[in-house]
Length: 114
Length: 112
Image (tube, rainbow over all chains, first blue to last red; front, side, top):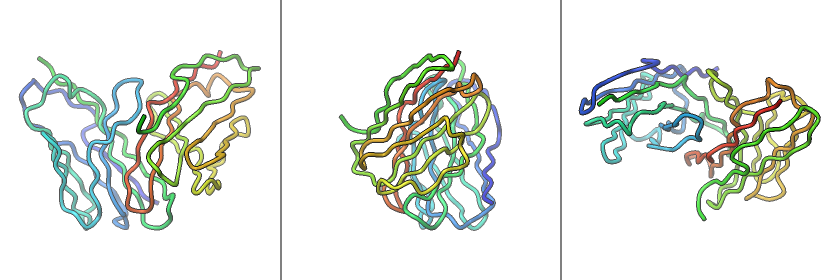
């Protein structure tokens, strides 16, 4: 059974800092890994999607890496801003099936202070 | 309109009421999902529909009844709910094996 863990569970940093969020998964048989952002009481916004054959993806100040063999992904946020405050979730999609379900991590709650 | 749209955004219902949640996707995806998110709990998959056929039901109580009339629309019919069913209900869609998921904004349900 796939298990996804995110460390740390919560993080508070001052504005401007660069930070790294970690995601680990136990089964490397995945098609892709997706990072989401969730604001309180809201839905999930997709940030980055990394296919299993890729090593990293970048979007603006965000960079996500994937090391499938070791079961790890990191989300790097450069020059953090208060607007980055949210919960960040990673999810892996297993091999097999059109409607293969995602397994979500426990999330990292990020607070960026002024 | 693009993306995944959920209505209503908020819903308060009594335990004897019957209501429905609606989800619509304009992305041409061929699979749709209902997830439940309770406070301080990870996302729970409730139902999966692929090509309009239900392919998975994770032993969700029968007071939740899904309906997928076509590949763009998904409903969740609710009846005789319990207060513990209060949660954020999220709809998502995906396309083929390699695609990512797109989520709607969710319906915040409160059962009184």
